[in-house]
Length: 437
Image (cartoon, rainbow, N blue to C red; front, side, top):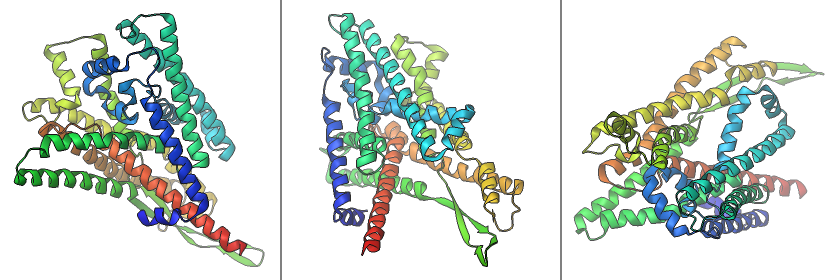
């Protein structure tokens, strides 16, 4: 990775792109610290921390802490991410969107435009909900309609501006802009997390326990990162053979190829879906100010991630079992709507390709479906292990950090993808220079 970056800095065009990306990221982080005019950010931050506790840990991580501070960029990239997921799901339900997705570059541009409009609508809806909720809680000081409207405009404009910044990185910088901004938001929270771990497990300890704590912390972090990289890069390579064709007086085709199927086909989406689904009831309960007891209270305690793997209350870890089961379920569901074995088999047949030992058509579809079945399971189990590691250490040892398995998967995935894009751009520059000589 470092060798790739060092070589990239030698190429003028890539160096300019890297500088532009860094400039946009600085603007993004400055916006995350800029308070909304007319409101007391410190008061709102204290209120959010007291009321919601761990319910918004994932959201705070995605926004780089700007949501907790309720800055201008409080919503950050979350409306765009939600809009992208909604569009992917609607593509399966609406044939017109599915056809648009297959229209190549033109269809992709139209899909991006629709995603932008959905992002604006979600930003406006979320901003209105937040502003009205704060008004009803008396957090906006001398309440006036103008204050609420001002807050809605600031939050919506901030989200749209972050989306625009991400698109600028995609066009003029390096990597996928939204992913890069999400990466820097997550990473910005990590120094504070490591400092808290230092104060909790290292500071003031004797040399023996201190060394053990340092080794365990580094081992867990490095081990989780290595496991995540292996899971992201792992793929099942299916050999594909293409039949020979006669064109003129020459035989063409007949080459062998590879159909790669990623083990982690759904990426981090199943973990996000499962976390959001379990956190939703707790958020509603806390916003309503309810404090149920008995069976209902037990259920809410089971749904709270902070109670999982607690040695004093192992019964609350039932929620962890549900969480892992939902992760596996969503992995199968999301892959089923993004990976179509029948379409791949038909395209392979049209191009004269076949899998050695498997007949074209339905047998190929059935074969790909069977391969996909156990590959999804392996990827889902890997996701569960990565997500479980921070949860276990948080519950058993009280190592409370904002980043978890979801954040680590996103960070490793974005870094690896960005490095691959830089390498591909360097390769294009190399061939361009070779052809012009």
